[in-house]
Image 1 (tube, helix red, strand yellow):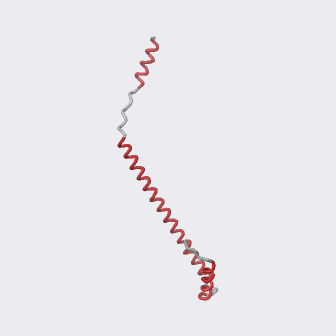
Image 2 (cartoon, rainbow, N blue to C red):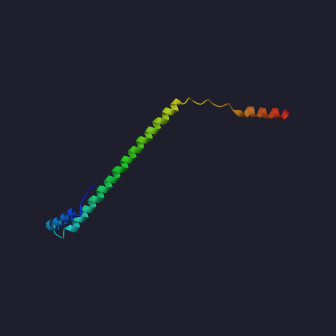
Image 3 (spheres, one colour):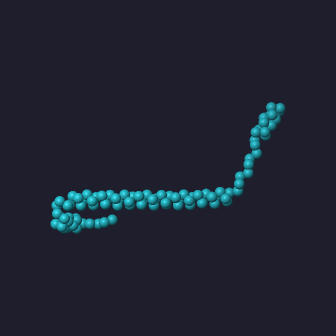
Amino acid sequence: MLDFSWNELAVTGVVALVVLGPKEIPGLMHTAGKLVRRARLIAHEFRLSLDEMAEEVELEEYREKAQKKAEAIEPARPLPDPSPQAGEGVKETEHD
């Protein structure tokens, strides 16, 4: 980020005071504050959009991996219905 020493800020302040005068400094500071706020908002929105795009890319990669794994797995065979067999086993134990 920007790295200013106190000496540089003091010199800039004195030059602004001499060039603009004491009446213009508050308006200048207000405008500078608005510009900094707007720049931070734009940077924040940019970061959010980059994070969102990265998340979408990661999700797409996971989706592709899952699809490849699903294609590699053989389709499961249906299990036989155990209810008719279970009834026969119960009947056999009753007769014994």
